[in-house]
Image (cartoon, rainbow, N blue to C red; front, side):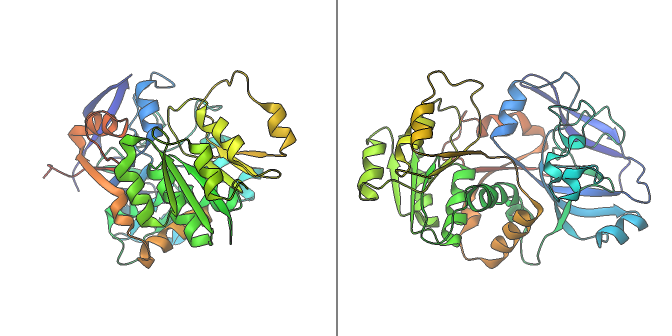
Length: 372
């Protein structure tokens, strides 16, 4: 194993550089992952443009790779040995608090960078912290005893496994948070990797009508939504989206609205409120907007709408995502549209942000491309 590790480091807003780190010594209860794929999502775009703190950070929180070195205690606890391919969740909980004991380690303060400046979370933690390798835009990733790992099923490639994060989010937000199930009618706003993942989750759950909205620029993504199981697609720039939803549902409206848009302002929320059925509809939002002027609270209460937040994924959702990938039921490989090497991290992030390439769904960073 090499003595040095190459990693792309965010050094400031919209700035990255490739640096060398010493290969860390792995403790008995730790391990080292040779990163094969690190997925890139819209959160990376936002964090890259406006970092929450000034420290250098190795980004990358959707990580898949092979166990390159494992301590004895780590292997005993995790049931993993060198050579196993795993998906690593980005949360690193304390496993002592109330949230962790409930299995909701995603809410643990030890992994919440928003409230804890010393939090550990892959893709968000300072590279100045011990072991340094806290992000997937690197050839290797450090795995402590409290990392959350999932063995990748045989037959699922590393690049396909790189879709676990968006797919597990889709499962969590649609099925668990929103309660989509048999005969549900669903409006999914935004045909990006999250929206398309929710199409699959809703189809698998037995939804009777899946409607997906997008813009004219999303024509290829909307076509893919149909291929993955959407019943109807709407170009909001060419059609009256609310009128179309009501036509499709016979004037009833939908049971659930899932907002997967990015940078679309208040329009998707307002459409969602109007598109929901007369009473007891559910809307899941991502909370991109810091404030919402003239929010129609009266309409929300009159329609008894439940507004829930989209917040990460659970262990079970990751396992279901891996099972879905292994099943081959859906052509999920079509979600993986672009890949880049370690030296092109800046271009990769900007591509996800809509600069340059078109018809982008999921972008993969391959740390060993172009390296010996």
